Image 1 (cartoon, rainbow, N blue to C red):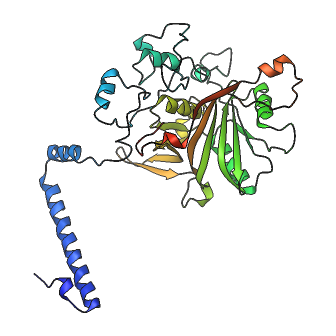
Image 2 (cartoon, rainbow, N blue to C red; image 1 turned 45 degrees about the vertical axis):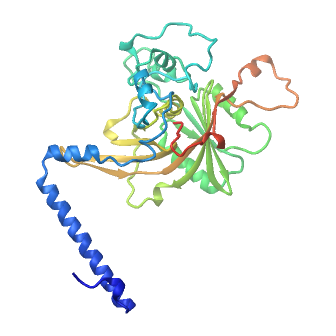
Image 3 (cartoon, rainbow, N blue to C red; image 1 turned 45 degrees about the horizontal axis):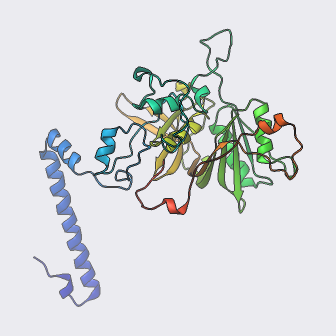
Length: 381
């Protein structure tokens, strides 16, 4: 046993002895761990990993009764323990985005919910399944064939209009170019400044020309800072804060994109609000991807932040797969979700009744407020 470092008066020698002892201790710990790994069986390793699960903010989140797939038994068990946030977005159906099944006790469904065999994947509640089949995105999951005479023809891809705030800067235009490359069937139109180019008028213009979605990239201090996503023709409208932007050219070793329709991965959209937001993103992409392109777009929710990534995968063998990032990267945070589409504010509205009825101005379905964050483990998506 060597000298204790605290007993050495020379500072430089004391540091050398301390670091040498610490290095020897870590090396002995590593050798012990490697020896234990070689000696333990597969069953012992599985049991050890099952017990040693680290606690994170995600897997100890507060229970939310709006989580899709949570049954009455799970709700009872959650009163004593948190529920992990692992779920998958159903590929079919729709969601009305209400925060609670009992939000409107006076209104009743016009038809009976579907039987359990026809419920969307991951939904064991008939009321939730009915909501998922009757919301604003239901038409996306019953797509129209591109050829009316051929029912087996590929469905029509979404038609998306991308624009910016008035007098946008170069950085915002570059980000819009990235979005045009990400979203198949999208088109960028530069927004002019002045009366007649409000978001409500642009939404009405896009609705009349058959666009399915409108994406408005807002900016502040000559940099994109928010995205307004409007689903046409009747909403809803969502507003996201935009941060951590990295363009494709700024990613080292990035892959080149191809015009193939990408596959879509929606991860951890577990609540009814999260399903509404996830289905808004899902409606931006064609229902049938081009698998030969080997491109995949991911929206991953973690602590209510939505991380966007785009990759190309390659099969190196029957057991190994490699990923190469294409870009861009950015992070979204939902600030509010409204029913309907934006309207046009006028001091004196002399428009005909048909023009007024075309505007679906609704209230907030959900809005972030500081008083909602009562705990670090409370999440809404």
